[in-house]
Length: 251
Image (cartoon, rainbow, N blue to C red; front, side):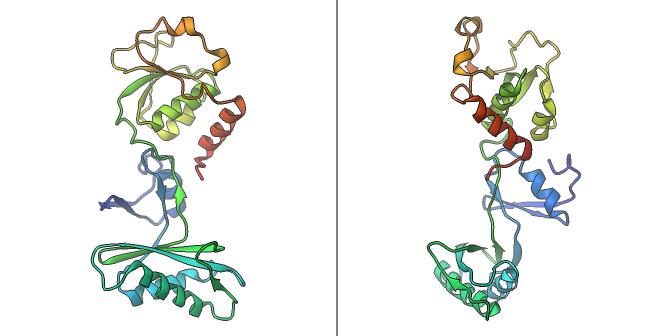
């Protein structure tokens, strides 16, 4: 996805985390938000796992991110062996933020803060950030095989996208707003025979329909499993999800 969007980055993987280093943060975030299987991402400041370094980093990070009179909390977690606990991180980092923003009348509120700061310590490194950016989640694209998708209207697009989120690659029949689906799969396969949705290479098909428009007689003509992910959704529900898919807005 990064290559498709022309985003230069260095990617590494460790302990169920992908780490992406790039000079093009906004473009990178926009790109990663289109990847199924990714639940969230965060833009972080990195430092060592030394407590003094964590406190210095989060103190600098808090400047201009917390306003006069606001409350805050530090949420910490760690993996590995360290001479401190997550509670210790929260206490020391919170004190560092108070000291750095002295005179702004800020205060700690652990239950309902105006701002949250996160510290994640992993072995000899620590990561400071203030937001989890929601991504589509679901299962990695292609992990659940291929299905045929009837994409003739907005409901068809949304239904196809929902099956992509479930890990299915698509063989598309129809041509309604295919660019939207290609945003999430740049190798999207189009079928030249738009009338024949039966295929030996697919495990089933997905159809965009509402309960009111469900054609039982037509369904019975097919021997493969048929999926209707939007059948319980109103047109307004479909329109809202369609808008969110367009903008990769999953918050």
